[in-house]
Length: 64
Image 1: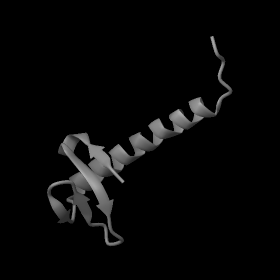
Image 2: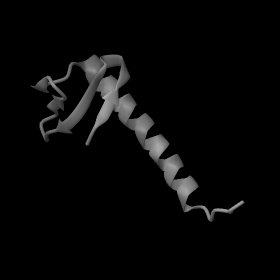
Image 3: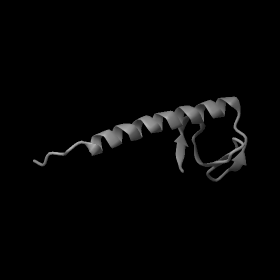
């Protein structure tokens, strides 16, 4: 997984079952409440963008 979190200017590359996050080039840490909210917001935004991508690609396409 790679999730860029703009407010943190960081990329989350892994999350463990205890809620710790592995930030690219920084290592593992327990995110603060503010960081958790930023990560959740970025993840939801990315999920929305991916849903839109899937919808577009699943439509029958027309060639010019």
